[in-house]
Image (cartoon, rainbow, N blue to C red; front, side, top):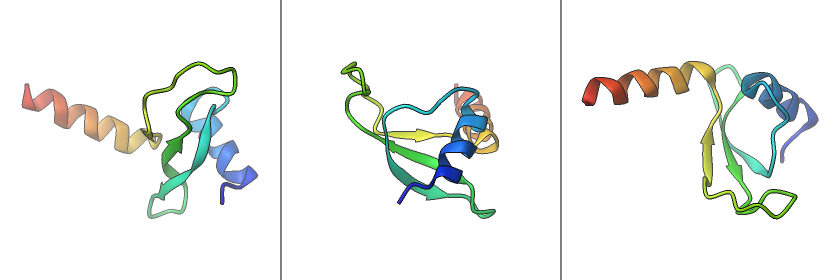
Length: 71
């Protein structure tokens, strides 16, 4: 179940209102959402092909650095 607190944390993590949230797929060790599962379409009907979205800034940054070092 996605709580109002989860959505507020997502808003702060993303810097915008979260859209198309189906559920929180994973929480980090501190209990904050870190992965969101999204609906296949946004509320306005726009397709949203990303099913799982990494929202934790530290995890996203670490993954980005890891991917860059592989190139």
